Amino acid sequence: MMTTLQIVLAIVGISLIAIIVIYNVLQERKFRKEADRMFSQKRDDIMLGESVRSEATLRRSETHIQLNDDASHAREARQAVDQAEAALPVVGFDEPNRSDSTRAKPVGGSILTFLEPVAAEPAPPIPAPQATPVAAPMPEPAVQAVAPPPRPAAPVPPPAFLMEDEHEEAAPAPRASNLDAATEYIARLKFSAPTLANFGPVLSTLRRIGKPVRVFGQRPDGAWEALSSHPRNTYAQVEFGLQMADRGGALSRDQLDAFCRALYEFTAEEGGAVTCPDKDATLAAARDLDLFCMGVDVLIGLNVVSADSRPFTSEAMHGLAQEARLALEPDGTFQARDDFGHVLFTLANQEEAPFPRDGRGLTTHGVTLLFDVPRVADGLVVFDRMTRLGQDLAWRLEGRLVDDNSRAVNDDSLNRDRARLAQYYATMEARGIPAGGERALRLFV
Image 1 (cartoon, rainbow, N blue to C red):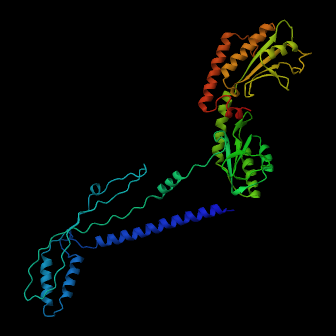
Image 2 (tube, rainbow, N blue to C red; image 1 turned 180 degrees about the vertical axis):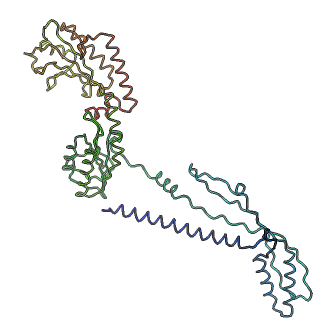
Image 3 (cartoon, rainbow, N blue to C red; image 1 turned 120 degrees about the vertical axis):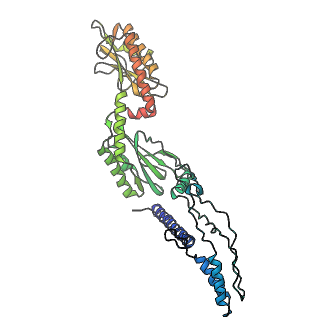
């Protein structure tokens, strides 16, 4: 079903095409008339060796005869004109050299060129013969060979696509929402007028697809805001973003089809027009993005294990964790956070039992420090802080610091891990997905 805007745009487009076609037809007819007029003169045929008088000469002779009304001198006047024209040299017009008569004019930086004809010098007009009675043969007049009058340069219409480009450049760029085209598949819904719609059912359907979805609506004042299930504002345009990859893998075709189908059904009920971009290109981009994320999705773990079968007590772990400015979370793990509340690293029990809230009654033979590389900004600083805490715990609890393969961790191994970590961060920065940034926090969940 076409909207009013689409109908108006179609009518305007058809009108522009009709105007251009009519203009070209009129110009073609004008050029054809000019060509017929310029090339209607007959010239010497050097292949046949004969000379033919031009049509303009015949017209002048006929005019001369008509002006002589006296029947007694008509024959003598015609003979005089014939003698004068017999002495008239035949003038040939050579075609101008294209390299001399035209020049290339670049337009708008494109390779198109317009050829501008060079006007010839104006020639003196041929005097009209005088109609006078004669009794004797007229003397032969001196006739000069003259060039034809210059053909006026016809206006050349500018190419239609240049006009469209100029119009597009002049039009202001539409304001975009906060969706990210590099990591999200963006579908746009436009209403003919700001509309207050119920987005609850469609948002519920989209969240069941299996990939994160973000939705933003544009208010009548042009500002964008995150859209809730029951918005209080009207929106002229809404953008739906489906994330192309996460730790569950790349976006699949079934998920993408379900996303677009839900939007089509919504617009069929609420009105408007929805636009879903090319799916094949999106799926290819999703696979590429997922492969990149797999290459930098690293989790660094350090283990502090007890020695001589002497377990750690929860009282000791509570005291050391609070001293290191770690907070006990509801899931029973200690976490270090930055000023914005983002998790830097965690301290968890190696055994299944979580750390108790009161810090009493638990013993364990080991704890683990975990560092989620792509989700942490300033990761090298955080890595150094975590490793210092691991070394301090091993010394104060009389345990050992080992990696996931139970190999002892020393300064050399930590330096090698730190160098590899710097490479991961450089790779993410080059891709435009800095660790701990907004994109990374959405992709690595």
